[in-house]
Amino acid sequence: MARPRTHDEALRLRLLDRAGELLSAEGAKALSLRKLAAEVGTSTTAVYSLFGSKLDLVNALFVEGFRRFGARMAGVETTGDVAEDLVRLGLAYRESALADPHLYTIMFTQAVPGFEPGDDAAELALGTLRPLRDLVTAGIEAGVFRDVDPDVMTMSAWGLAHGLVSLEVSGSQPDTFDFGGAYETALRMNVRGWLA
Image (tube, rainbow, N blue to C red):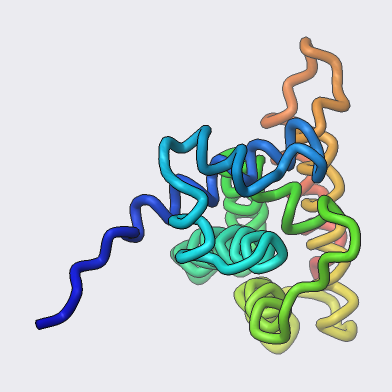
């Protein structure tokens, strides 16, 4: 008879979310496996059983962040209007970051010095740009966007979204600033600049 699992997916996700919160709020020194286990109400044995080492936990955080992000990006329904769909992808980018700011930090900063994602994790991260690149390529091929290298347009669109969202997540704007409205306006102006 198989032994029942004592450490389930729900516990794994609680540990990942709390670890991400600790890292983004207090930095790498705050993330000890003992402290994490205590904060989630479990044992260090559970943490080791689910993740292995501290670096394995950080890799799992990186993977979970990009898994959630990739699901949101892939879930954006296309309308057939590539210019509008490009804006919709940008809006989904922001929604993803605001839904999981504690993971966004791990995904795009060197939150843990010396951490390098495993090959599978790095491949997953790059794959999350696929919906953006596919949309850009379709728009160029349809003559909606300028005839440029799709990678140039993809990286430019990503850079704008990432830069603005990073400022918002870090709190680098006045409290009175309407970030959501300004963000969408910036996305639309960027798309307009790429139209053929």
